[in-house]
Image 1 (cartoon, rainbow, N blue to C red):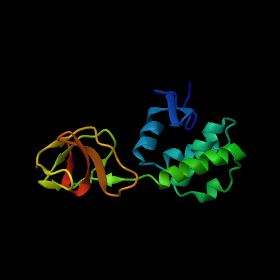
Image 2: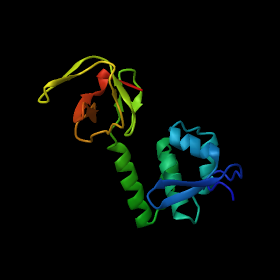
Image 3: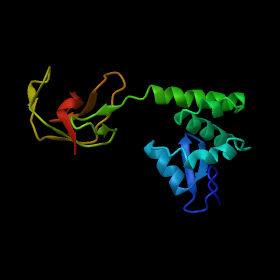
Image 4: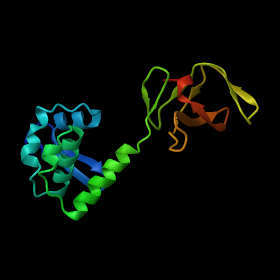
Length: 167
């Protein structure tokens, strides 16, 4: 089996880029896509894959061209109505994605553990979240920017990310 983007046959496995939408990718393509650090030279392979008969390969090629800022290439592509809807939904979700960073600028994700950097009074709960306390399995609320949600002393609270460090 070969990578459906670049044609490599090394370490190829299925990569799900959206629920129920996957393509076969090599390790190089997968790592670059997941990290977001795209090497345009490597992804010149999209010149061929963008014309694939596989709708998922076409959609992923379109998304990668967009991330690379290559509107000249996306303008050439023809997407069926369902493919265009998927592209629009994925690009909208990416644009609305909430990014929360800790005091050191490290991106926090749901499920991470964080350490509180200074004593914080918890309004309405009647206690202080002490410095050095580890908050496990945090979540990222979509409605409160710059905050995480986690349990301290058995109480679910919002904490400002600027007072936290990823553990």
